[in-house]
Length: 407
Ligand code: C5P
Image (cartoon, rainbow, N blue to C red):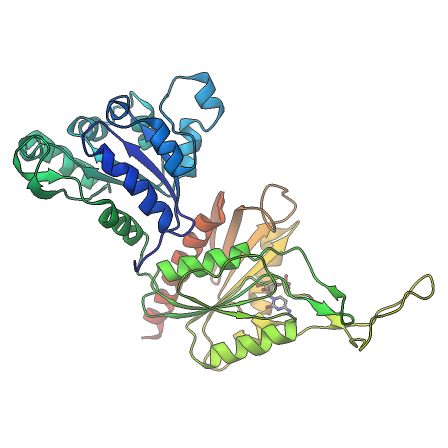
């Protein structure tokens, strides 16, 4: 499988139809491709396949009710709608597509469909005559005008004995199509270098100075850049995260290591440099060769300033487009714009770290992004993967603008 669904959140809606048995396999395929899956079943779907099967395969409780206090107390329809990166209805019956096309929201699936900002796709499955019916085709066309992706059904023999178009695509094909939906192509062929995580500054052979950076933002950006078609080198300090697929990871410890690795990677070719690392501002002036002994009531450690990695890269003659980050607790715009110009960045993404619900260790983030000539955009609180995609899209847009201006 070429494209992946790593960390993608898929709500799989199952409507009534014999092809519902294929959805069980689809859950497995989606998870094999790296997705988290929540299954929503219509009442008709439960006549064909049990929620228990889907629960076992997805590893999550199955959602069936809209107006049920217990169900809504868990993950309600709005939460599901917000959670999803993709809502896929497979199989999508003629009836469900008719309701979607009209904006009818009379069960959990059709309601969350209306309430989501995620990508939306349907995999129709029905008798060939029903598929060919003009009203069905009209509904399909209408859904397409609403930016819904329709995974066109295949032809062949059908459960009812007919032969023709209307068979739902196989699970393995659908999983691949879903992964392809996330390939934006905004950075096709571009080379991206990303710094991520904390650095560790050794005091002696066993101790160090560091910080709480998890590396999640940098890793999410690496994935978003891969989705956008880039070649990605991810230079990371010590973190507990798996290397994303198709990313070349360079593991480093200290700020000096990170600087050297960044200079090397940029020299090898770089169009976009993204500095998410929480580089230690200072390092011990001397690293003791032996473990420092516990003598006396106090000790002093002399610290010297670390080089500024992103500023060093931004000063290069053939510099890449440079995106930096800032964490501020007050006067966010002033400080962010100050760093934008002091470090000669092209763009800066700033989070307000006085908020406990976002930032460092959290899975969510919210940011304000600034760029030259008063550019500014607010990215509201959402999972880091979403923020990462929005940031990559912004970088790609600004890189294009600069290209056009220099032509
Ligand atoms: O100055 P401040 O640490 O707030 O700047 C944050 C930005 O600068 C981030 O993009 C960070 O990765 C980068 N940085 C760096 N090298 C340093 C310090 C910060 O690349 N030594």
